[in-house]
Amino acid sequence: GKLNPLNPKDRDFILRNVEFDTLTERPKVSHGKYRSPQGNFLIHYDTTGFNKVDRTDKNNNKIPDYVDSVAYYFEKALTYHLQLGMKSPSPDDGGGNSTEYDIYLWDLGNSDEPNTAYYDEGGVYGFTFDYKDIYNGKFPQSYSFIVIDNDFSPTDSAGPQEQPSKKRPAYKESGITALKITAIHELHHAIQFRYGKSYPSAITIMELCAMGMEFGLYPDSRDYIQHTNKIIQNLSIYPFGLDDAYTGYGFSIFNQYFLNKFKNVSIIKRIWELVESGIEVYGALDSALKEQKSSLPNAICEFSEWMYYTGSKSKDNKYLWHASEIKEIKFYHENEYLGSPISTSGKLKPYEIRGIRFTLPGDGNYTGDTIDVIFSNLDQKSASSQVSIERDYFVSLSNTQTANSIKIDGFDDLYLSITTDDLICNKYYVNKGLNTKSIDYAFPNPLDLSKESIIYLPSPNDAEMNDKCSISIYNSELKEIYIAKNIRVSLIQDKLIVPINIIDEIANISSGIYFYTVNSGENSNFGKFSIIKKN
Image 1: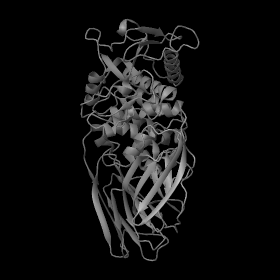
Image 2: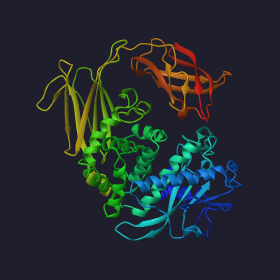
Image 3: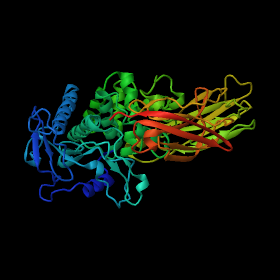
Image 4: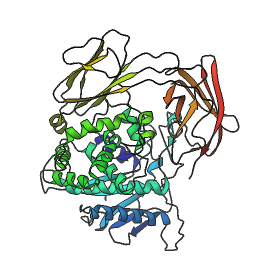
């Protein structure tokens, strides 16, 4: 949802979707200008046309209330940064014909290029465009301006014209909530540009820090979960050492780790001070953690445990703040142990976290035991230089003990053997199986979408863990609004369920009563649940 113009693909998208004046090289927004009360920002907006803002003016100050709100939340974001001792991006160099920092309002939520291959899961919240470099140090510093959406409407939609079925709401968060997190996020990018753009890597840590500032000022925001869910299911595609915007969005949860561990966000400020001094950004993060008597490799190794305890494995949010709402790690290999030795091996990219699972077969309603191994490649040098040197691991499960094997507690003859490159850390977790039971109700019911997004439907009678089901959901008029096949039966505590993420799967769902059927083979379950959706 948040583009970074340092990424060529993002910059191309911006230039296609926002109309720039060829003379000023600024977005064509000209009907209105509003200087924020503290004098740090100049808001550019339209009152007619495609990018118009709502003209409601309840306080009768002749400025649309939304524009007032933009000014308020950007000033609040600036105050937060200044309290941390960070630089201000204002005054700028007079770009946009003023010394105040410029913010442009554009209908980004409905601006998807209809025929482009570039498509993400939602609309663009905003972006920060660097336009003039100031070479004061090893890395270029620059002035910038910001473009954000003109209303963050819940009805804004995004998707390719040739694939209308993929069209969906542009924003996970909307209205003032979206404005608040976008203001703090994009302003942090503007401040990052004043410290310097690291080379050869910058984008992952830029985005990670910007979303970390969202956590610092607005800890209740759930916007990040959409990104975290994507990377936690695709950890080998998005290793932490990859310089990529989406990697930064998804690994924004790393901020929760050091916010909990070090109790403040000053480490983010320190990262950019170190970049300004000439240290590339992964090295800066490592140095900032060393000042806290840790290091980036040590932190990533410890953080892999935080990533493991999500979803049904969450421990009362002991680790990540909303751990129960985050999907579980998707294992790179799943191997069934039937008594004979079994092994797997592979290679990890820099700062890649990878899960390997061994499953012991269950019996009837007993789910069976699992032994999970989580590897992390802690190659700081390769991440800093953006050279993808892969590191080896080997893991096996056997009923025979060897010199370096680990006896698994709770089993008579079960041994885990792990061999890795020196730069790989590993942690293993033993999960005893559970006696499962079938239920005949959906929960939570009602489902309040402002607090949770997943509805757990009961599995059909006689269905077992990992059996495949088909699901249909109907509205109150019994019109089918959602269908899915090959959804596996999962477990929440001891209950066999089929989970559906309502926000991700059903576009524009509203408050009301809904009916469902869940089918597996000749067995089925049906019932109803209600949705509460607050605008």
